[in-house]
Image 1 (cartoon, rainbow, N blue to C red):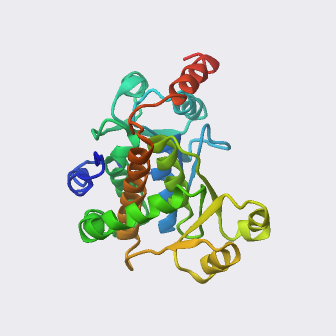
Image 2: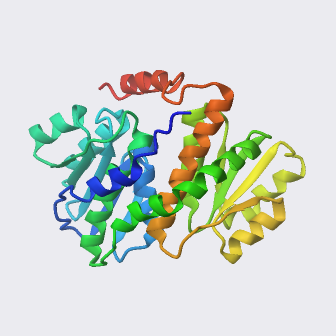
Length: 301
């Protein structure tokens, strides 16, 4: 089995060297799609002292007091290109994080800030080089000193034990349709779902705690093919897990940074084991390219 996540510790270390501009506005909105959205959503876990939130697509109610951080690893994502154009039209400042593509060309033409990164072949394998500069931007703005080297440490400390954990999780997931839940670590539930969808071409879904305790838990009465997993070990997480008989994926550390990097490694590795069992090539995509093409036609890009 290939392990596209095996060098994440080195990628996190190298990403610390990426220089970032200063955030000068009070409001910061992040936008991205898919694997380029989840770094921004995961940043919300840290609840930094800053007016910040992450969305998909074009931000609403933006002005010259807003900085839009636009992330597209390929630099060619139609929705993100459209969001950048709309943000500039409203007078917002833009900082783009990308490996190149059309967004790099736009930055040269329009004069907005660009953080150019280089990771792996796919966006999902390149999380360290996308997440680290984003966290540098936000932590500097919030004046909260995060030890971002803990991202690398999380991989090193838990890599070996999560190799075995990933095998166990993959076998349980293949018994039905996995649904991932979380409260504080809800964004990681989204990531688990994404990894399994893209790498293994296998169905997976997610839900947010405590909202699901008021509706979705009832679906397990007849949803006998659903296999629940709860990420986190807070008391509210235990309410969900006990109601539906879900397995808890516990956070291994007291450090949120270590938890994020190590659990994302676990998600990626688990999806690769599933892909291996299903004899799927993790990098091959069947339907996403079709959607991208049709979307570019809608946005006339």
